[in-house]
Image (tube, rainbow, N blue to C red; front, side, top):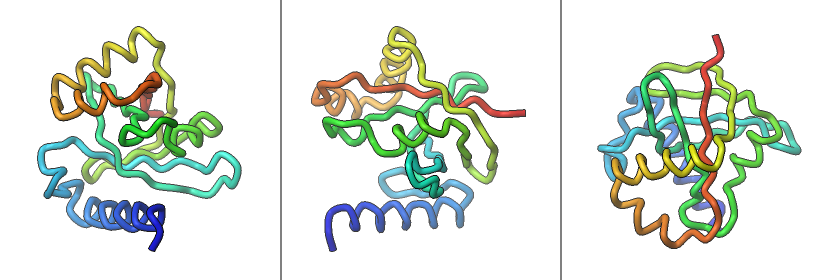
Length: 141
């Protein structure tokens, strides 16, 4: 099994557990707010679901394109740039949202808040040489 196949299989297992338990994945994600983000492939239009940690501020939900410290943004980020209408699952709730990339200053502030809430991300953040995009998932009415 290739590394990409292993990541897809790992994600598939997390997605299945998330949906079976109403978002209570447990294990290394026990104390982490986790959501499922479904995007349309930038070129293929194919639906792809990604488990992501998120930050909530009031009724706003943000995700970050950290990509585990990789030097490039994750594929889901490129997908939502091409097709900003996404589906979000938080707990047992599922809704449509518009993905909006947050401005540089606000993105830095949000990333600082996320690192304060999740100190283990501080080390990862220092390894990334690119700007980490922050994305608001704005619920559609």
